[in-house]
Length: 115
Image (cartoon, rainbow, N blue to C red; front, side, top):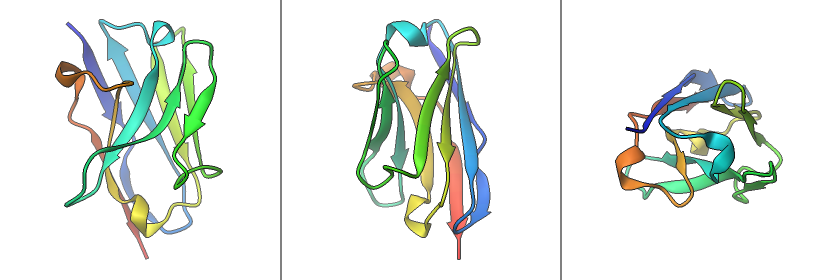
């Protein structure tokens, strides 16, 4: 059974930084394309960053240059370093495979950016 647990969210002022973590069990991150998604109130969930098995990364235009996705294969953990946060980054952040597997969605971690 796959379990993905996100953590690290919180309340931060615009311009600040946060680092999210995703711990996985029942799935080997390095064998999959993994991603960070987010869902803001009233909006659809969107993929913001992904990392392939070989380590190459890809980002949505809205976060390019500000967010960095990384992976610790030994810990089977994935991270999202978020810098220069903007109000529009406020959302619940989730990790999952790319494309997302329906049964893998966790509770997510709330990120709230204040002015």
